Amino acid sequence: MLEIKNLTVKLNQAKIVEDVSISIQRGEIVSIIGESGSGKSVTALSILKLLPEKMKVSGKIKIDGKDILQLPEKKFNKSIRWKTVAIIFQDPASYLNPLIKVGEQISEAIIFHEKKKYQTKEKVLHLLKEVQIKNTEPIFNAYPHQLSGGQKQRVLIAMALACNPRFLIADEPTTALDKKTEKNILNTLKTIAKKRKTGILFISHDIEAVSMISNKLHIMYAGYLLESGNTDEILKTPFHPYTKGLINCIPKVEGKGKRKLPVIPGNVPDIHSRPSGCPFHPRCLKAKNLCRKKFPDMKTFNRRDVRCFFPEY
Ligand SMILES: Nc1ncnc2c1ncn2[C@@H]1O[C@H](COP(=O)(O)OP(=O)(O)OP(=O)(O)O)[C@@H](O)[C@H]1O
Ligand SMILES: [Mg+2]
Image 1 (cartoon, rainbow, N blue to C red):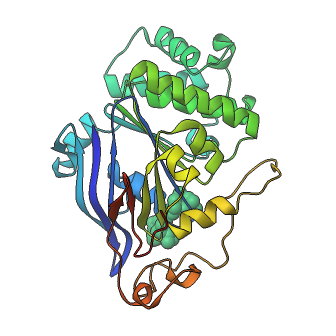
Image 2: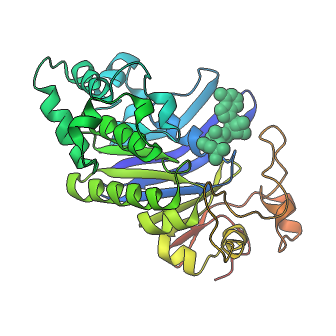
């Protein structure tokens, strides 16, 4: 199990992420959804200790009970990155070298991380097949610019799987893709979780995508989790006014191309000037005096964790 426990990330005096707790079992897909700037990527990067040094991380990140944040950098790099936890990002183009054929790039990852020198082509072709690339040989020999957006993202997923990680973090892996390609990639991730028993942390702006892919959902706002629980139950009966707002704002007509999270009037507060009390109170139609003064703790109501003084359930 991968457990994030009371994770807090500070930049000078500002808290970018605070008191975030998420656990992911092997074979399970857990989603985080939130508006731009809510701290999703900072949370993801902190798991792999990839944040800039100026950001200070506290809390625990445990894998099968062992706190990996305590590992020295050398050991962390050798045993955790790629081998235990791998990450795929939103923009595949910027993570592929345009001058090297994709097959070679995946081979290089295997050779580098597994210290292998031979038999990698066979393994790469197998990985490409696993991520549902049909013509594996031509793709192996192609340069990144010859691939479609969906194919590039599949190549990055194949690369992330190269060292057989137990957990995969997918930070908005489908935001840049059209809907049909997105659906196919989500199905590929689901198959990976099931067949390899990989635990996946799926980060998204898109309610439809998280409803398709995950069994657990966390709603993130201004660095905090506001609601956590079973995905279907949250989407059917949201308890937090923020979650309710997000779901009510989903447009009835499906748009094309890049989709953003539906818009609730107002903005996510700036990390350097968070409001007092509940971080959502300035945008909350139900806010009362208490919400302006006191910060709400996460409380459990009917198997749901909610950070609100007045949840509706
Ligand atoms: N390297 C950095 N230096 C300073 N501030 C940063 C840095 N990276 C992120 N932040 C700040 O941390 C906050 C959270 O950013 P983060 O990238 O985690 O948001 P996000 O939820 O992933 O947004 P998006 O949906 O746009 O990807 C933002 O206010 C952002 O400006
Ligand atoms: Mg992000």
